[in-house]
Length: 340
Image 1 (spheres, rainbow, N blue to C red):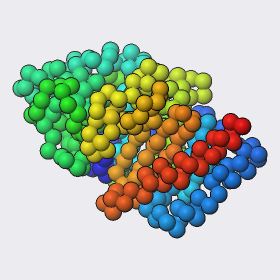
Image 2 (image 1 turned 120 degrees about the vertical axis):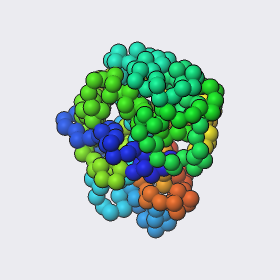
Image 3 (image 1 turned 135 degrees about the vertical axis):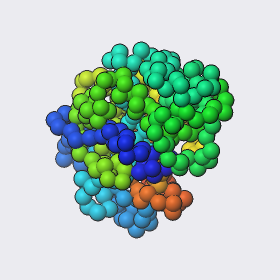
Image 4 (image 1 turned 120 degrees about the horizontal axis):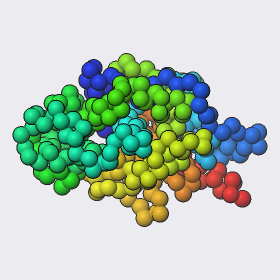
């Protein structure tokens, strides 16, 4: 979970178009005056608490049953773009699911070298031939990773593939930022088009996201982070259209392995999964410094936070603290009023 600016070398800027300019598409449901009054009651005093006690938090958006029930923007501007950091990995997961559903990818157990035979000479270890797309998505490819903090730059996809293996594919989890350029290259090969174009057509436009900035990493609105979470909460459907196959979404947001650092939670397909026993578990996208998409199916709830991306913000964890306490408690209160 590192600074997104270090995730992708300049040659892989197409990945930054994961959330590129959008047009048309469905909007989130608008609130009635009565709903707005109940929203204000449930979240009363929240703005002041964040402004005065949590200076790292720059924005927060809460969706309940597909509608914005609370939004905070420290600068007063909902359209401010924020650095999403490693939250972009979960968006990349959505693109893999879309390509799978379209038949552009034969299956997650397809060997990587079946799509990229030109990489075969780059790694002499015979275990490399066993690495599949599933291994990349679950961060169990087996590459030797000397990066205990999860902050190393990934480099080029060819260089990532050429690294030595420390174990057999599927043997253990190891957080590896280098899966990002490798998956990006695989998607471009499978779809036959630049990733920017594929993302714009299949994911960004339908969700009606605002055009982001690509300078020094990917920046987008906090509400657009929440939209990605809402898409996965809705099992891949948006405005009556199945964008991501439901079976893929359900697998992506369930534990595929026990996970490990830097978040130390179970891991799905580029999503972290909370260790609960609920029929459908809470899951999250997490980026350095407090960039978060938190999806809680029992309440039909999505919370997105944007925070200052710094070592200090990461250490203090104010955005996560806010999410798990005040915002969740207020959302529970609002949910209860809906259910009455």
